[in-house]
Image 1 (cartoon, helix red, strand yellow):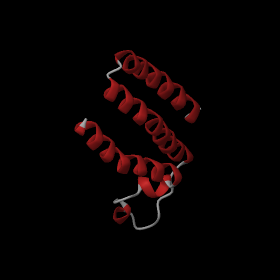
Image 2 (cartoon, helix red, strand yellow):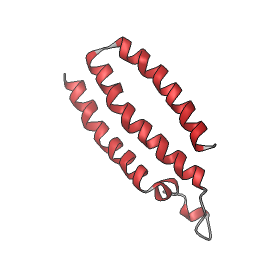
Image 3 (spheres, rainbow, N blue to C red):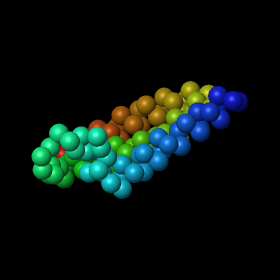
Image 4 (cartoon, rainbow, N blue to C red):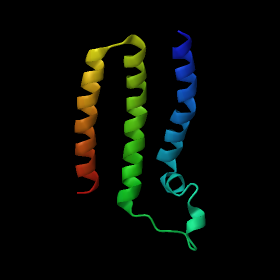
Length: 97
């Protein structure tokens, strides 16, 4: 029980980081790397869409993974792996189309 509470508390900042990444993808990509460039770099639309897509996938998948770990639902874990693989492949085709 204590591990579950600690795991949920530690996931709150990660979830906040994913929300920040979705709303400000350019800043999150360049976080800690701005010193490498003399001018402001131009990021392509594909990179921004990919960053938003990955943050949404992680925001949807994180609670599902936590639920499957807490309640030890092995079928949910199997479906999760297959579902994320298909969602990731189709999302990448949509972004880079």
